[in-house]
Length: 80
Image 1 (cartoon, rainbow, N blue to C red):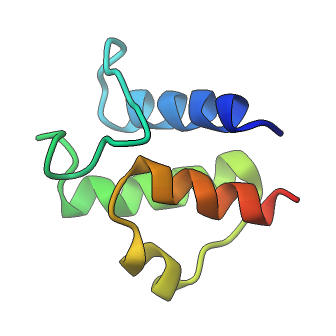
Image 2 (image 1 turned 60 degrees about the horizontal axis):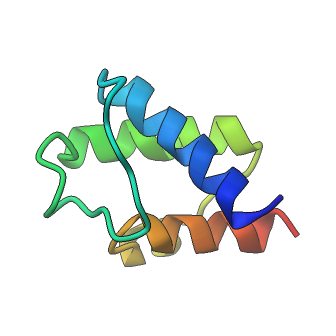
């Protein structure tokens, strides 16, 4: 799976969880740049990503994420 394909799937998850079909996600998107991405949404996003990609994240991994790029990298490593 390419980074572009992963980012597209991440985009779908964010759009669904944040209930915003027009949301634009990039690797630089972070909770600081996206108002709707609060702590509750973060938990929902993590669970939805695990389901969408059929993977599990460690709490250490999730804690270290600073932006969508970090999420993409975690998924890419697990998808190899």
